[in-house]
Length: 119
Image (cartoon, rainbow, N blue to C red; front, side, top):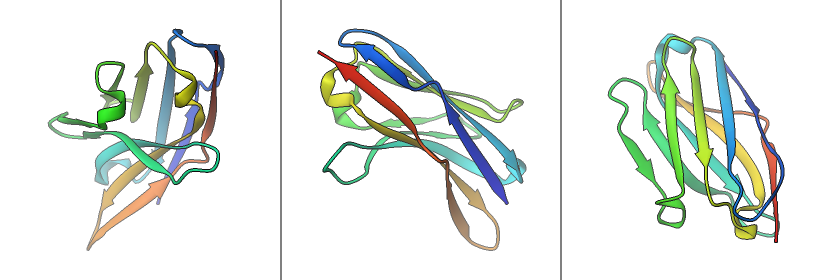
């Protein structure tokens, strides 16, 4: 019902910035929020940031406050993750997620994009 495609990952040095983009297609009119998660090697997938589709309110993980931010373009059905002052600890596969409202609420995931930060 909703397809998500991430882009923008790559190999960067510590202190660099990177912008990830998530493009949604399908039943996008039913999106209630979009979010970014990440999974580092040997670790569980963790929440990074989420944004409400209507009001734009943002929720950030403590680990990225002051460095990461999220924005969305409702007309283009995209949500971008701006990552500044990247650290080696930020190395992970970053996944876009969307919450879709129907009779209930369903979550959808993108395929992930690799971010590698060298020291």
